[in-house]
Image 1: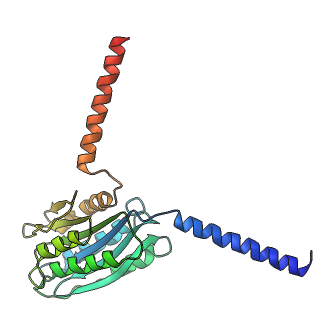
Image 2: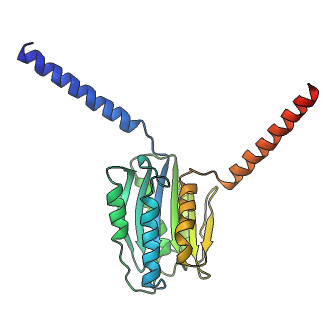
Image 3: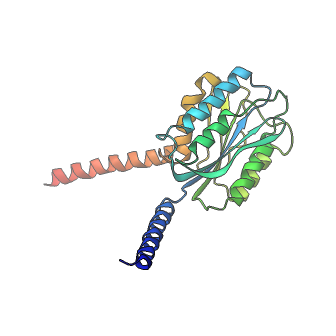
Length: 241
């Protein structure tokens, strides 16, 4: 085999490999774009903030909860007096999951009484709207122990998010002072826990629900009704036979 033919063959094989890799990347569509807005305001003690931060890191690092195949895109912001971006919206896979977890573990708390919850929703909305990969669902996930008291109101920001095309604005409220009145969108929901000690288990279920790995309660009811109806039909068929 001449050197020219050998070089051409190598180029052909390399091109085929790149094409197959591109096809594999495109084969996993983004099903959910998830913007995480995490409260770091001064109303949260340093120990409770650590519990919250560690819970997010543990939950998102678990492939049984967060798929690492590119089907879910995630961005992370924290809010106190200001909104800080920790991880820009990106599809999560084996190449960047470590960067996501490092970004969350690197979050620090700045003591302040201000809580820019509305601006956090607004920032997350802008990121989702401008994200270049079109996902089938856009979800804003907020965790907080209080309510917004600076900048745009949380309800106005949530209304604007839905108007901009975001599908859901959800809330995980911690303690009796949490105000989740900004929950918006079809199928949107809020969950509450009494303290940050109970945060992680609830966050696991919330992320699973938001990424549609477990059905919405309404879907479960429909599935249950269908199953009951199916049993009834089978019984009638047996009696007829």
